[in-house]
Amino acid sequence: MSTKELDFGEHAARGEWWLRYAAPQAFFPLAGRLIPYFVVLAVVFAACGLYLGFFVAPTDFQQGEAYRIIFLHVPAAWMSMFLYVVMALWGALGFVLNTRLSGMMASAIAPTGALFTFIALWTGALWGKPTWGTWWVWDARLTSELILLFLYVGFIALKASIDDPRRADRAGAVLALVGVVNVPIIYFSVQWWNTLHQGASVSLTRSPSMATTMLWGMLLMALAAWMYAIAVCLARVRLIIREREREMAWMRELGGGE
Amino acid sequence: MNWGSVDGFFHMGGYGLFVWGSYGVGLLCIALEVIALRMRARRLARTAGGEA
Amino acid sequence: MLASLAGIIERDLRLAFRRKGDVAQVLVFFVIVASLFPLGTGAEPNQLRAMGPGVVWVAALLAALLSLNRLFAADYADGSLEQMLIAAHPLAVTVAGKTIAHWLTTGLPLTLLAPLLGVQYDLPGAALGALVASLALGTPVLSLIGAVGAALTLGTRGAAVLLALLVLPLYVPVLVFGAGAVGAALAGLPHGAHLSLLGAFLVFSTVFAPWATCAALRIALD
Image 1 (cartoon, chains in turn red, cyan, green):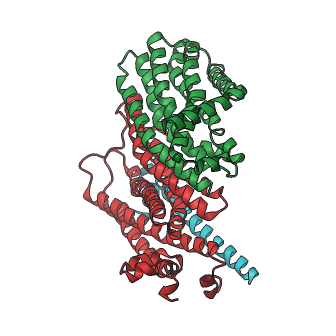
Image 2 (image 1 turned 90 degrees about the vertical axis):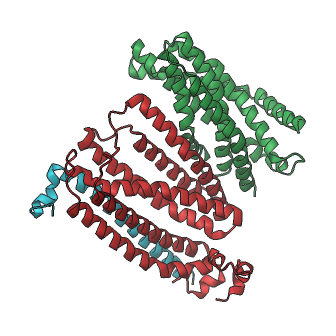
Image 3 (image 1 turned 180 degrees about the horizontal axis):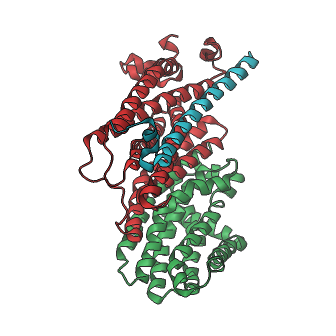
């Protein structure tokens, strides 16, 4: 494959070498090469994080062992929000540069983001039962997380209902941008609503003296979730590229993509 | 080391159901996502093979 | 530019006037939804007062949602939207005009009708005032955000349900502060802050929503 064939050949010529990878045909093999590294990193980080979380971090004197859900719950919640922002950034990039890859990346990220949102909700419920005595609390964070799940579902549904992939990408980008502007407003309004209706009696806020081992366990698990998300999204974007560009010459040369 | 025995580890101080319910479903979600991607790849390979 | 804006508003109002049924249906829907809740929960006055603000606001939200479909759909179907795209005045003017016309035919009547439903829920005078004020500030936001969703779902499969899925989560802040204003007035608390925030949402969405709607319309008509 020569650089001449690439959409962004002229950028590459100007020394903006990274833009070369904005073309699916250049990104496709790169993603394939990178995936194993991210998988290994995810497994190593998860192993270290879980070891710290289950074998080193001490029992919480208030919540007993139930707090160990934090090592999954908080990283999942962080990733769910982070992935939405990344998705919107890809959408914005697609709007500015009009690259094919950006929309595909946004499509690849959405299901994983929704998955992490679901995990955050599920673990939140299972944590809430022993700590608060109920499966669901209209806590500001849980409620915002639920609305975030709706936003992800809306994004996926919009993309699924438009047949032309280029149009779907651009419509999705507009929706993701509108969503990302609204997420802080939604969070703030739900927070306000929560303090009014709930009082500050139940709160997930950890005591300030959170053990350092707990913090490290959480950070390692967050890194594991991050690496996992990158690996899975790269794998999915490769599938999307193969599905969409099946008819293109460069993909045929690869032998149907494999 | 926090746990005296394997039983104690799974018991989680009485919160086993909640802790393992969380991690179990988390793992299940990840497994399902990976399997879904595998199946999508296989379907794609099949249709590509059919066209050629 | 103002002349073309007025022209678009006038055109849409005339069209709405010709199909009075569409406007009336939305209002009847609003009344029916709000009237169903006491039948489901019981008519204990204290309980009714407690849930009144939320129910009336949610009903208004759903009614506004129901009317969004016709914002662009008819013009999209008969091709006049494409002509608006290449018209002499900017697309943003068209979008602004159609959004204003949409609010005049849904948000405004809903606002005027709301005190009647408030009385059903035994809301006192101060709360009724807050209800009208919050709806007056909030329903334009619903029209503005809804226009983005309506433009995005133009010509898609299952547009109506999809539209609800896209737009309802974005309505959350308006619902929280709109119903919150009425709730505060009901509790005898000042509700100026809620109304100021609704006003801020209105300014914010007036600036940004038409831009997103224009982008979405260009994509739909590409």
